[in-house]
Length: 144
Image (cartoon, one colour):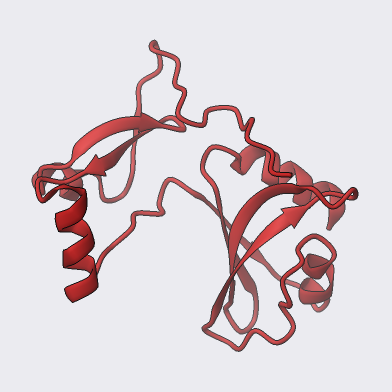
Protein backbone atom coordinates (compact mmCIF):
# COMPACT_ATOMS: atom_id res chain seq x y z
CA UNK A 1 0.00 0.00 0.00
CA UNK A 2 1.36 3.42 -0.93
CA UNK A 3 0.11 6.61 0.67
CA UNK A 4 -0.63 9.25 -1.95
CA UNK A 5 -2.07 12.04 0.15
CA UNK A 6 0.92 14.29 0.64
CA UNK A 7 -0.18 17.89 1.06
CA UNK A 8 0.96 20.06 -1.80
CA UNK A 9 1.49 17.28 -4.31
CA UNK A 10 0.60 19.12 -7.48
CA UNK A 11 -1.64 21.50 -5.52
CA UNK A 12 -0.76 25.11 -4.82
CA UNK A 13 -2.88 27.85 -3.31
CA UNK A 14 -3.52 30.32 -6.14
CA UNK A 15 -2.61 33.19 -3.79
CA UNK A 16 0.83 31.71 -3.05
CA UNK A 17 3.87 32.91 -4.95
CA UNK A 18 5.68 29.92 -6.46
CA UNK A 19 9.21 29.32 -5.24
CA UNK A 20 12.03 29.00 -7.74
CA UNK A 21 14.61 26.23 -7.75
CA UNK A 22 18.33 26.85 -8.08
CA UNK A 23 18.06 25.99 -11.79
CA UNK A 24 14.89 28.00 -12.52
CA UNK A 25 16.62 30.53 -14.82
CA UNK A 26 18.27 27.71 -16.79
CA UNK A 27 14.92 25.92 -17.23
CA UNK A 28 13.33 29.13 -18.57
CA UNK A 29 16.33 29.86 -20.82
CA UNK A 30 15.99 26.36 -22.31
CA UNK A 31 12.30 26.97 -23.06
CA UNK A 32 10.77 24.72 -20.41
CA UNK A 33 7.04 24.75 -19.83
CA UNK A 34 6.82 25.56 -16.11
CA UNK A 35 4.02 24.24 -13.88
CA UNK A 36 3.30 24.43 -10.13
CA UNK A 37 4.40 21.45 -8.04
CA UNK A 38 4.66 21.38 -4.24
CA UNK A 39 4.91 25.17 -4.11
CA UNK A 40 7.63 25.44 -6.77
CA UNK A 41 7.64 26.40 -10.44
CA UNK A 42 8.91 23.18 -12.04
CA UNK A 43 9.70 22.23 -15.65
CA UNK A 44 7.32 19.66 -17.08
CA UNK A 45 8.49 19.65 -20.69
CA UNK A 46 11.09 21.20 -22.99
CA UNK A 47 10.81 22.14 -26.69
CA UNK A 48 12.15 18.73 -27.82
CA UNK A 49 9.02 17.09 -26.39
CA UNK A 50 8.87 13.98 -24.23
CA UNK A 51 10.18 11.60 -26.91
CA UNK A 52 12.95 14.01 -27.92
CA UNK A 53 14.01 14.45 -24.29
CA UNK A 54 14.02 10.67 -23.81
CA UNK A 55 16.18 10.10 -26.90
CA UNK A 56 18.58 12.91 -25.92
CA UNK A 57 19.00 11.44 -22.43
CA UNK A 58 19.62 7.95 -23.84
CA UNK A 59 22.20 9.25 -26.32
CA UNK A 60 23.93 11.86 -24.17
CA UNK A 61 22.78 12.75 -20.65
CA UNK A 62 19.92 14.22 -18.67
CA UNK A 63 19.68 16.44 -15.62
CA UNK A 64 16.94 16.37 -12.99
CA UNK A 65 16.65 19.41 -10.73
CA UNK A 66 16.27 18.12 -7.15
CA UNK A 67 16.73 21.49 -5.46
CA UNK A 68 12.99 21.60 -4.61
CA UNK A 69 13.22 18.27 -2.82
CA UNK A 70 14.02 17.69 0.83
CA UNK A 71 17.69 17.10 1.54
CA UNK A 72 18.72 15.60 4.87
CA UNK A 73 22.15 14.61 6.15
CA UNK A 74 22.26 11.92 8.87
CA UNK A 75 25.35 11.80 11.05
CA UNK A 76 26.28 9.87 14.15
CA UNK A 77 27.84 6.53 14.90
CA UNK A 78 24.61 4.52 14.58
CA UNK A 79 23.13 6.33 11.54
CA UNK A 80 23.05 3.22 9.33
CA UNK A 81 21.45 0.91 11.91
CA UNK A 82 18.91 3.56 12.89
CA UNK A 83 17.91 4.35 9.30
CA UNK A 84 17.60 0.63 8.52
CA UNK A 85 14.77 0.52 11.10
CA UNK A 86 12.77 2.84 8.81
CA UNK A 87 13.64 1.51 5.34
CA UNK A 88 13.75 -2.02 3.87
CA UNK A 89 16.89 -1.28 1.84
CA UNK A 90 20.21 -2.76 3.00
CA UNK A 91 22.12 0.43 3.75
CA UNK A 92 25.02 -1.28 5.58
CA UNK A 93 26.40 -2.70 2.31
CA UNK A 94 26.15 0.64 0.47
CA UNK A 95 29.67 1.70 -0.52
CA UNK A 96 30.78 5.35 -0.14
CA UNK A 97 29.65 7.45 -3.08
CA UNK A 98 26.85 5.02 -4.00
CA UNK A 99 23.11 5.68 -3.86
CA UNK A 100 20.19 3.36 -3.18
CA UNK A 101 16.50 3.93 -3.91
CA UNK A 102 14.33 2.86 -0.97
CA UNK A 103 11.15 3.70 0.93
CA UNK A 104 10.15 4.81 4.40
CA UNK A 105 7.89 2.13 5.85
CA UNK A 106 5.46 2.41 8.73
CA UNK A 107 5.08 -0.04 11.62
CA UNK A 108 2.37 -1.95 9.74
CA UNK A 109 4.65 -2.36 6.70
CA UNK A 110 2.88 0.14 4.47
CA UNK A 111 4.98 2.57 2.48
CA UNK A 112 5.01 6.14 3.73
CA UNK A 113 7.16 7.59 0.92
CA UNK A 114 10.12 6.81 -1.30
CA UNK A 115 13.58 8.35 -1.03
CA UNK A 116 17.16 8.16 -2.28
CA UNK A 117 19.95 7.34 0.19
CA UNK A 118 23.60 8.12 -0.55
CA UNK A 119 26.53 6.92 1.53
CA UNK A 120 28.59 10.12 1.82
CA UNK A 121 31.31 8.41 3.87
CA UNK A 122 30.99 10.26 7.16
CA UNK A 123 27.22 10.65 6.78
CA UNK A 124 24.14 9.48 4.90
CA UNK A 125 22.58 11.97 2.49
CA UNK A 126 18.85 11.53 1.90
CA UNK A 127 16.80 13.09 -0.89
CA UNK A 128 13.09 13.04 -0.07
CA UNK A 129 10.04 14.06 -2.09
CA UNK A 130 9.15 17.75 -2.21
CA UNK A 131 5.43 17.28 -1.62
CA UNK A 132 5.97 15.05 1.43
CA UNK A 133 9.20 16.43 2.87
CA UNK A 134 7.57 17.94 5.96
CA UNK A 135 5.80 14.66 6.80
CA UNK A 136 8.97 12.66 6.09
CA UNK A 137 11.05 14.85 8.41
CA UNK A 138 8.43 14.50 11.18
CA UNK A 139 8.57 10.70 10.66
CA UNK A 140 12.37 10.67 10.91
CA UNK A 141 12.45 12.89 14.00
CA UNK A 142 9.89 10.69 15.73
CA UNK A 143 11.71 7.45 14.90
CA UNK A 144 15.44 8.17 14.79
